[in-house]
Amino acid sequence: MTPDAANAAVAPRTVKGAEALVEALEVNGVTQVFGLPGLQLDHVFDALYDRTQTIDVIHTRHEQATAYMAFGYAQASGKVGTCLVVPGPGVLNVTAALSTAYACNAPVLCITGQVPSAGIGSGLGYLHEIPNQEVALASVSKWQGRINTVAEVPTVMTEAFRQVHSGRKRPVVVEIPPDITAASGVLPGPLSAAIPDAEPEVDLDQIERAAKLLGNARSPAIFVGGGALDAQEELLELAAMLQAPVIMSEHGGGALDIRNPFAQTMQVGNDLWPGIDVALAVGTRFFHQIVEWGRDGGIRLVRIDIDKDQSVTAWPPDAHIVTGARSGLRALIDKLGRHNSARTDRRDELAGLKAAKHKQLGDILSPQRDYTAAIRRALPEDGIICFDVTQLHFYSWWGFPIYRPRTVIQPGYQGTLGYGYPTALGAQVAHPDRKVLYVGGDGGFMFNVQEVSTALRFGIKVVAIVFNDNAFGNVRRIQKEQFGGRYIASDLRNPDFGVFAQSFGMRYALTDSPAGLEAAIGEAFKADEPAFIEVRAGAFPNPFPHMFFRRVRGAA
Image (cartoon, rainbow, N blue to C red; front, side, top):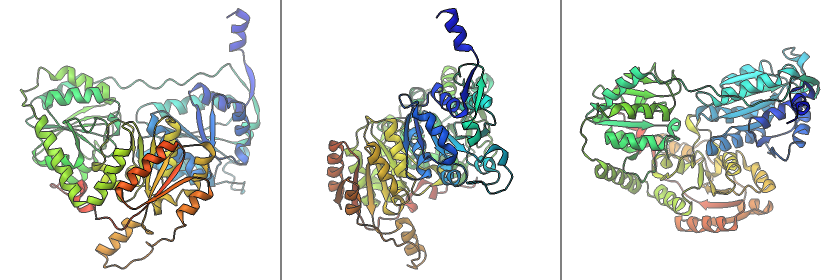
């Protein structure tokens, strides 16, 4: 580079606020934005028009879907999912999706409009005005920022990306008023990418304490959640050293390939719990153990978590390692050898426990088992599946075999009915070369049914499987079993889904059996286009008496 070119590269320059905002997205690696335009965003979308070679924009039919697609994109890829909505009703429409992302620790960036700068807080009734918008968003996001001048764009956006990439990954929000997007201002030079915070240094005293506890344990166990998905190698090495089961929560599925003997579901973990003397919790809230199972036999607890406050008050750990899963596990492995007792090979025992539990529950809940098995056979190992809150959802927590991380997406503790279809669309956008399934019921699917239009408009090849019982099935079963059949607000009137799908030009199939579903999925995957499979299903047996969180083991 010549001296003149170098000077030009760092010289102050005049740009519009919207241009600076979009440039900040680009330099921070955003290649995909899910948005819905509106008055306060006109200049932002115009700036995106000039960046279509580097940033793809998918517009949805409802603001809620923008954030759900960003959530699905983030969960499937591990990268930041970005959504863009107008203030007021647009913001309020995305809060359910942001709350889901918050519950699931997903890195989502939500950019929202605002009313004109001079009107913020005035209460005069500007279009889309709500008081204290950033306060409304604070409950569902990790950090909130507002761009008040064009010159603030680099600072605010750098901090937003630093926050979303650092520590516990959760949604962040940036507001920008329309007068700032339209105004021109001077920037000191080119924008640069944010630098995430370094992980906390491992406390070697805590590592030593944890190594002694685990090394001397008679029956240790490892419990993992979504924070451990990128530590497969370390988890497997530590499990082998301890001959300990790795018990995966509904978010930790895929941390180990379920076919590995050490890999266990929470159902098996529940049965093992009374005999465990030292538990290692890695990247997990540890909710069911703390709230439901109890501390049988005075279980000693070791925690590895990037969030120093995670569940510490509810159950103070005996050793507390505040860092990322891989770093903490690696440090623990390095110290464990000199403390570790001689271990009997437990692989055959653990594999047998898993197989027996799977058979026991599958025999009781045979419709769920048979449909889940058909879906698993049809879906490639690297395929992605998004379970809406429906009949197969709860069974999938232990009954759907997961082979790779980030291939099963769940709604987390929000249990957000209807989140699933746009979330699956976002996952497909993140991995256009992989097969993606949505599994939902007629109740949940109709929450975001309009996004069929988005799938077809942008060629997003998700295969939607909708179990149709003309009811909110879980609600109706509860009303039957617990309230003597006093049915209220649980019956549904649906469209003819075949006519509906075909009116959009979407591929459609109808079945009423697991074998028929497996065949229909195969045909849809071969067609390589958006598809809709309707499964006519009756009431499924109640999974809740057999769920791990129903089997309390003692007082906390």
